[in-house]
Structures are given as structure tokens and as C-alpha cells.
Image 1 (cartoon, rainbow, N blue to C red):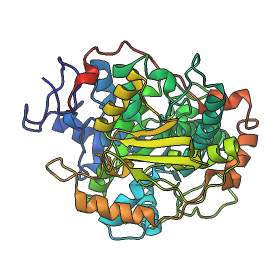
Image 2: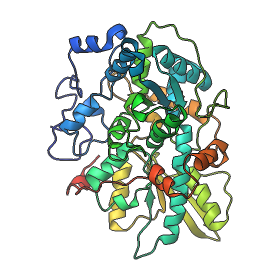
Image 3: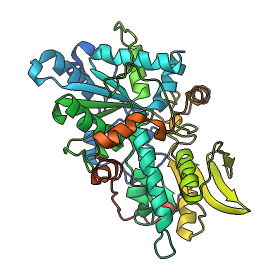
Image 4: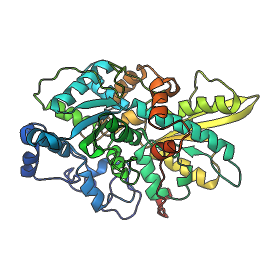
Length: 456
């Protein structure tokens, strides 16, 4: 039996229609749930339905299913309760990192500005027992900067004998999982090796921050608040690519919708609090975003950098041209009638499939593609932009897109803190440690023979 996004003929997953929407990963009994939650018994568990997985490829294995059961509010509350019950020497420091694409959801849901929504969310998490709340924008800075440098290197190395292009982004875990498990060797070499913001944030928390606080990584429980369920799968993948000290970067991922459900069912007194910073001399962090329509903006930033580095062109305004549909856009740099750079954004699996078919046939004209599993991008993650019946909440999504576009844009190159971290934490911008901490490798599994013939 297959769920609606499956790409294989045989599948162990069930769709919502197979089991009346009652099948979830790692479901536990009510007695177990109450025992684990303790004083948080009024806060409901949010569950992942199998048909919500955007990265449905060779299916979630039994082992992954067990691990996914730990990517839930239940495990989060378990750590919170242990901190309240056990000896202080056994306490774990709870750190939450919030993705910028989650903030418009909370702003829309609670009718707040983005800044106030950030402060409200931070205050709530701390009222539960979280010690530090960070914004992941600085991790996205690193991901974008490393992607920029890698594209320029690939452009110079590219030739008929050594096919380095197109470079495909690797920040979306649903897309990366699909590429690794279904598409395999024809696509893997084209994936950008820069780690995703979530993976980099894990290293910042478990390595840099841990050293600042004189803590061992095992003493820190790192929670990421994200817009989609695939981030939970990405947290499991980090076991293959750990931080420098061997610790898993992210211990638990909770979607925006799960956090909102907990907030709505909580009667805790909440005081708005400013988000924390990795830098002690900064009192309050402003809310920034990157130049993306609803993502971290790899396309826009890499395009500007490449135009400047490769052709000496300074690009201010980027003009996106929609092609076959609203989720496939093209950006070009032209001079004297010649196309110097051709970039694209491919959102949703229908566009991904078309992209792969053309890539395999050698008829793909792009140097760089920003690939995202969700149509309309990260704001449309199924962990926050869904109605109760599982469809996209279009009115909410449109509201979130308006809110997100109003957040000020900050180019990653302009961050003094990023430069400081390159020198202090990574020993320079071109050091071996940069490659070790900010880049990854991919598993190239044998692709399914019929995977590219599916009609999405």
C-alpha cells in the first residue's frame, strides 16, 4: 500500500484512506503518554501521519520509524520533566532554534508582528523550561556563503569531461532524501555539498555554544522549530554526518503546528522575551531574512555573487520569470545578447521530476537550481500550512507570504558575527575545519528503475 507521494510499486506505508487517518509513526498508549508528560498532561501530543511525509521514496524503515517516534513533543516533555525531577547534576540544557519560515506562521496565527511573534514564542518556550532560544538565520548565512563559493569553484572546473554543473541546492531535506534514496548516482554529484541551515545550527549549538558554556554536547538537548516534517528526517540523517565532537546536532524537531497546538492547550503564564544570541555583547536580535520568496534565498544570493565574481556584474534587482508554472522560475544574466548565467527555482515534485528527466537527457540548460520539495516553498511546509483535512490552507499561506516579504533582508556577507565565527570558530574562511564542519557527503543508493516515470 502506498501513500499519495510514493514513488515505488511496493510500499509498506498506508495512506490516510487506508486507516481512516489514524496511522502514525511511533504511536504510544495513553497510559504511556500520561506517564511521560507528567505535569504537562494538558498539552496534547502532535503526531506525524505517514501520508504527510513529503520525502516518500523507499519508505521509512522500521529503525527510522522508532527514531521518528522520538522526534515528537512526547520526547521533548520527557526531557523537561527529567530536569524538574532529577538531581541538578543530571539536568540537560535545553536549546531551541527557530527557523525564520516558522515566524510568519505564528505572526499570522496570533495576529502579531514578526518581532512580537518571535518574542511570544521565545517566552512560551522558556516558560516550559527551555533555557536558550536562538534564530537559525545565522546558520543559513553560512549555508549560503559556502554555496556561493562552491558554485564559483564548480563553474571554473566545469567541462564536457568533468560535468560539475548544474549545481542543485541541498538545503531542503525532502529533496535531498529523494535524491539519495530514489535518484541516486546520476544526481548525487550535482548536489551542493554545503550543509543545510539545520545541520549547521546543530554544529553551532553542540560545538561552538557548548564550548562557550563549558558544557559537553551530551548535556545539551537541541530542539528545532521548523515548518515541515522532513526536518525530522533530516535530524536522523545527521547521525551520518555529526558535529566535530561526534554528537548529533539536532535531538528533536517540532513543527510550527505542533508548537502552536501546545501553546493553545497550555494554561501557562507567558511573558514575552527576546530571542537569545550566541554573542554575549548583543542584547536583542533583530528579525532578518534572506532574499528568497519563501525560502532561505540560495538562488538570489548565489546569483548575485556569481555575477560579481565571474563577470564583474553588480546585480541589484533580480527579475524572476515564471515558465511552465508558478513554481518554476528562471533568472538569467545576459550581456550583448549572450546568456552568461541561467538559474532556476524548481518547487514541488512535479517540477523536480521534469528537471531530472531533462537532466538525464542532457537537455537541461541551467547552471544552478534551487530545489524545494514543497510547492510555493518553505512557508508551505506541511507542518504549518495545512487545514484540518490535510490540504494547503491557501488563505493562511497567502497571509504568511505577505508577512515574510515584509521582513528586512540582510545579505549574509554583511554579518560581522559570521565573519567573527569564521575566524574564531572555524580558523578562517578557507581552513580544513570549514570543510569538515560546513560541508557533507551524500549516500548514492541504486535508484529505482521506474522512479522517474511516475505521474505526479
